[in-house]
Amino acid sequence: MASVSKLLLLLLCSYCHSLVTHAEDDPNYKVFSIGSVVPEANCSETKAIPSPGGATVPLHHRYGPCSPMPSKEIPTLEEVLRSDQLRASYIQRKFTASQQTDATVPTTLGTSLDTLEYVITVGIGSPAVTQNVFIDTGSDVSWVQCKPCSQCHSQVDPLFDPSKSSTYSPFSCGSAACVQLGREGNGNGCLSSRCQYIVKYLDGTSTTGTYSSDTLTLGSIVVKSFQFGCSHATSGMTEKTAGMMGLGGGAQSLVSQTAGALGKAFSYCLPPTSASSGFLTLGASSGRSGFVTTRIFRNSKVPTFYLVLLEAIRVGGKQLNVPPSFFSAGSVMDSGTILTYLPPTAYSALSSAFKAGMKQYPKAQPQGILDTCFDFSGLSSVTIPAVSLVFGGGAVVNLDANGIMLGNCLAFAANDDDSSLGIIGNVQQRTFEVLYDVGRNAVGFRARAC
Image (tube, rainbow, N blue to C red; front, side, top):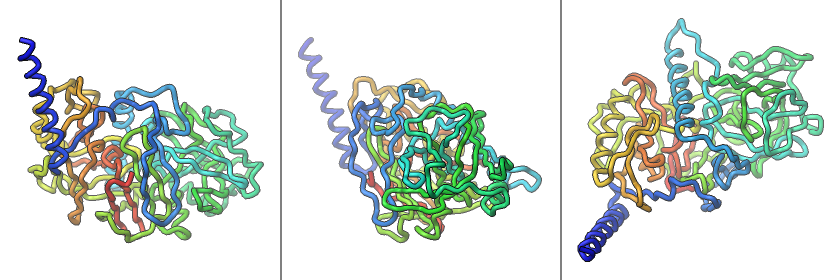
């Protein structure tokens, strides 16, 4: 009996080995390391390879061991996914409202900060004071907490003190910057003749203070007269970051402000796991090699977001039988949304095809909105079908294994209906250098950049 058990174990091991070998040799399969599911204790600092040009700074996952602001309180996956759904729903509602002539486009950002996962380190002021901030392609107004602060959340960095910066200047209420701020829905009146800003979030959190300018240091580049919110009060926030750096397409964003000096382009690489590092490059040079590109579409009523046209999805090398018309509403490229949200018809086809390629693994219970889950107990690695996203113009993006799975579940979800806007979330963007070449109306993807 013992010999039979040993033989069975040997056969199983051989089968698992053959699956892994098959995945390594066959582009239609990928090897997914179960170790990437479990949070690592040490920072691996894998070598990121940014393209030349622009100002580059390291980028870290907020909860990983590489983070400059480690937190002991890590939310559960279910909590994060609830916030993710709020953000996705808000983005979709905002675009729906923009298409209705009698509707008011909401100005609330629409999410708590729980879905923002990536931080960079910048310098504010002269002399520069180090500040660790979130990045978000779904935000325009950048802000940091400032002295005096009547109601601030705790942060790892010292509060920025504008009185100690020789280049700090608050905007007056009649300034062009203040008028523009009000036009975009973030004005908050005047206080002692100084322009006031406010950013509200859907969960009730907010930041308010003086709209100002000062010197921003980003890697090796110094940006003079950078416009940002000097926050004197935050409400409901428990983050350890100093604030937010907005990478959206609106007039107040970091990208728009530096377009004249650095060019209207930026890129980032989101690392495969929380224990490794990526990068953010501002002023990334255009027309570089190694990228597959697709067109950016913009909505003048919702200028913050970057839209692309997803046309098809491939699973295990085979294209899903979903007509392109189901993707015609477009998809937002968003660093702050975690999952990729698809029309229900497309998601159902994706889930079915993926399950068909995962028959060797038992099914597991859903985790929140994630309903295509598997039991990987006792395994160190598994083979999964490759998933590719096909964008307008023929750009094919072959997702990394860590861009397909979130834990033991497929990292995609369904929208409420087939006519809803899609969202390409940050899980699917992992390991790619994602180039937003706004000047040329293109988004590019370069594989294995971090």
